Image 1 (cartoon, rainbow, N blue to C red):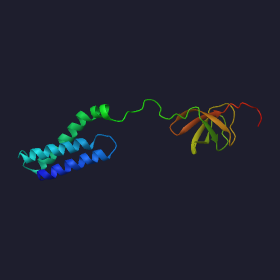
Image 2: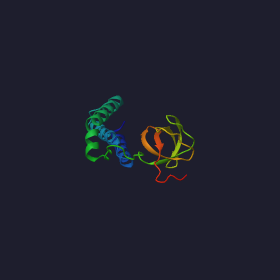
Image 3: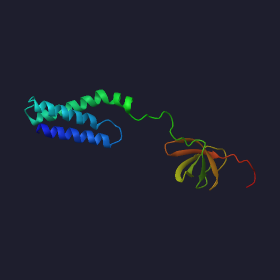
Image 4: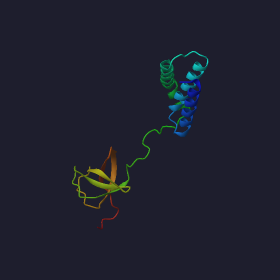
Length: 150
């Protein structure tokens, strides 16, 4: 490939990095294309296979060596712990669920698998408190009601 084509490829890859959310991938490929362009311009590469091999080595090497450092310095912060906990929220059963059994419950407008951890059965439409979440399963028990009138 001609030296100027490597510059164009490098520029396009850097623009692609700017257009994507900060993962810091394309920047290394763009920089590698610029390095190969300079090597080709000064006559250090004589064949296309050597250019592509150098491009691959530079891209893989720089990504391995520098990506984590860039992410630590300028990347989006990774939240620690649970971002959005459903524990303690109120769900509504979509069917009757016996103690120790699975069923369906609605929470935030979505249907979930639900496991009744309580000692009493849950009737359809009953409000329940989420005790924990494991994957797509809610572990629920009957909500304590402040009044005993049903």
